[in-house]
Each structure stands twice: as C-alpha cells, then as structure tokens.
Length: 196
Length: 196
DNA sequence: CGCCGAGTTGAACTGAATCAAGAAACGTGG
DNA sequence: CCACGTTTCTTGATTCAGTTCAACTCGGCG
Image (tube, rainbow over all chains, first blue to last red; front, side):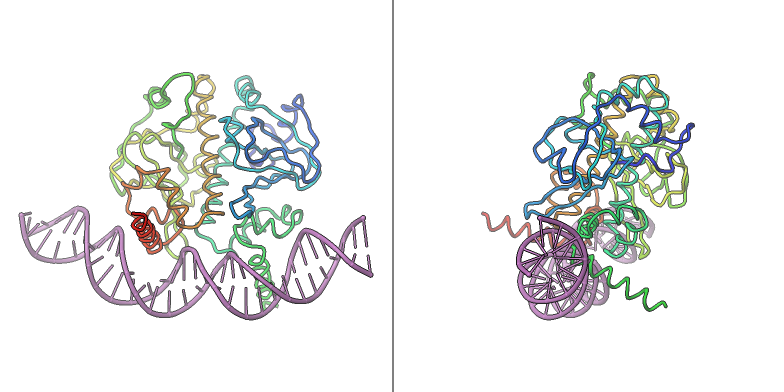
C-alpha cells in the first residue's frame, strides 16, 4: 500500500534491500493472476509485501461497480487495516492483476521488529507517514481536480502502472467511468495534435 | 489528524490521559480563532495535539476555492506531513476555527518516545494505522457515494463537528458546493416530512 | 472462424456547479 | 440593547462535466 522504493532514504542506501533482508524469514507465497488474498467479509490479519507482480485493493458498491483504492506493484506493502489491525471483517477485496509473489507478515512481527530494530522503527514510521501523505494528496485531488487533471497526475505519478493495467481500471482508480476516460484521452490527444 | 479518543483501547484504559501524560512536558500554545499555524510555502516540522478547540487542514485551488481535508477537534493530532516529515514546503493551510490550545511536538520527540516507551510505540502505530484506514474510507466514499450519501455519513460519523462549523465548511469537506449541500439538506427534510 | 473483453463513439440524460438575488443569523460598535 | 454591515444560508434559472445506455470496432485467442 505504500512505497518503499521512494525517495525516502535513511542512513542506509536502499530501503528495498533492507526490507527484503528483514522479511527474509517470513513466509513467501505465490499468488497467480486473478486470485484473491482478501474478500469482503474476511477478517484476516496479515500484511503483505509485494516482491513481484501487481495487486489491487478495491471495493464493490451496491450497483456492482468496482472502485480501486490502490495498486500495489513490487516494493509496496498492501493490507486491509480494518481486518489486519482491528480484526474486523473487511469491506474490501485484494486480488492479483499479474502472477505475483508476496511476503506474508503478521502485525505482531512488525511490532516486534520495531521494538528490536531501531532502523526498522524509523523506516516503518516514515513509510506510514508517507502513506498518509499520499492518501491526503489523493483526497485533495478528488476534491479539487477535474477528471482530466486527475488523469494527467496519474500518468505523471504512476507511468509504470499505466502500462500494466487495463484502461478501465485506471478510470476506476480516478473515480470516473471507462467511457469518460476514453473521452478525456481523446481530447488530450487532439490538444497535442494542435500544438504541432 | 487522527483520533485518540476512539475505540482503540490498549492495555491501559484511556489513551487520552496516557497521551496527555506523555506530552505534558511539551510546549503548550494558545491559538486564537482564525489564526494560522501553517500556510502554503511554510516548512515547519511540528506535530500538534489539540487539547481544546477545533482546527482545520485545507488547500486552496487556483480558483481560490478551499478544500477541507480534515477537521481536528480536541483529542486529535494534526500536522502537515509533507513539511513535518520530509521538510518540504507545504501545499496546505492549518488554522483555528475556535480559540484553541495545542501541544507542540517535534518529530524527534515522537521517535524518541517510540524508542523508550513500549506502550507509546504500540499506541502510535495503532493511531497511524487507524488514520490510514479513515483516509481510505473517505477515498472510497468520494469514489462511490453521492453527495447525499456522503453528507449522511458525515452526520453519522462527526455529529459533534457538524454543530461547530458553518455549513459551507461541511460542504467543502464533502467536496460539494454550499448551494448543493443546502439542496441536499432540503430534500432530506422533505423526505422525512413524508414519512410522518 | 467466431467469440469475448477492451476501448471508442454518439445521443440523451442527470447530478452538481455556477451565477445571481434575497433572506436569515450573527457580531460589533455606538 | 438596538442598528448596521457582513457572513451564512436558501432558492431559482441555467449550464456543464461526467454518466448512462447502446452500438460498433478492434485485437487476441480458443
């Protein structure tokens, strides 16, 4: 759910390698494309670190429409905090968009790590703070940006994900319909045409 | 920014008292209504705990329109993580909606506490996780709820805040115009009328 | 070859925004 | 304690961004 391969650098150079070392004795699991690690109603208290592949975290409303809250490619953590932290039943779904490999981590394991490992404590704190910052930015964009502006921001922020998921999922993430995104892209293409 | 007086209970009974004890030797400041502790462009690395009063965290877009990301009444923490954690210039504003009293906390102080105080470490972690959960729920609502549904959810979740802020700020938080909120409320009133 | 999911395009529709004008509530100073 | 200006809230008329529904294209794949 939050990046590790970001600009956040601690004393050591690559948080990524640090994380992998720290999690090396957790259980690794393979999750083939289209399979779930979480469905609505589950109460399963795990965090996952994505080593390979791409997952999505989403809800389904009463009309059956999906709303993607987050994509999680390699190097990201993903979990449903409602079930992982509070042991409540989840309202959300997590499944794999590509064949993936995950490290499964219990909340207790993280707490223990923060107690025993200074460096991890600070990294964990940074990651959580950064995740909050990212979510706030997204809320700010949902409150103040048009569909076009949100799309352009997505392209800039997640150019890699853009290429790995179908367009209708990007639309779902942006909070618009696939048709609308298609039109937004068309208009942008026309604008670029004119410039030349 | 995140609740302390929530259902999150640790071993001890009231997290609120625990927090107050822990922060008792931080600097307390008074912030009169309408005064700011953060403006766009500031890079000021502090967290605040609201002891009394009510603050808001918001952005202003190019058209001069305000977008409220969060209200912070007594018992909540508030900060701009972009400046508090990363020392970047902030894109947001924080000001007081009522005469308020705050405890000012440095990031270093929090890190030290998490190192030296087991109980605080776990509480801090819970609070951050819970804050993330709340932000995700808000994003989910912005993606899938109508204006009316979001308003009803707000009334249910923050009945206290509803009574303490002008209606146009609630509209701003919900991502609609004051005029729209007025109409939503009118329709709800008419519906309730019919029932009787 | 034929099917199916993804993307595009069009036409009609709608929820919410905008603009404008009044009414009500609020607080500040005389 | 009232009068006056300012802010807040409401209401109406109009517009617009984005939705909905439906038809069609395209590319992949059994």
